[in-house]
Image (cartoon, rainbow, N blue to C red):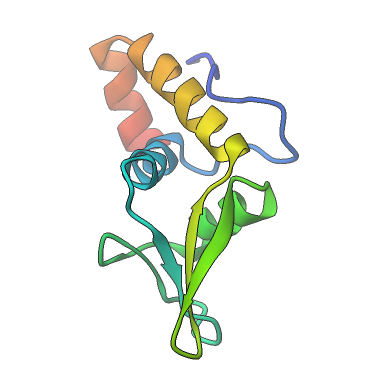
Length: 109
């Protein structure tokens, strides 16, 4: 089994470590997570719809916070200090893996 160095103290485990790390990478580089309330399946990052459970995980655990509102319903989210710490820990964890371990994480989560 692959070590979970990305797991910092939190209430719940990361749902799919590769996808969450990709989301954190994009947000850390300045892209905002956009949520449209009332349409629970609509959350976007870089214009691509994402699974709602990634958004829920990040919001419930305090890794993202609203930073702007567009129109009546579109909310933009950015990383909190905890989110930045998760990103940095995730990058260290990812860098410690071999190529076979990385492939396993991408496929299996």
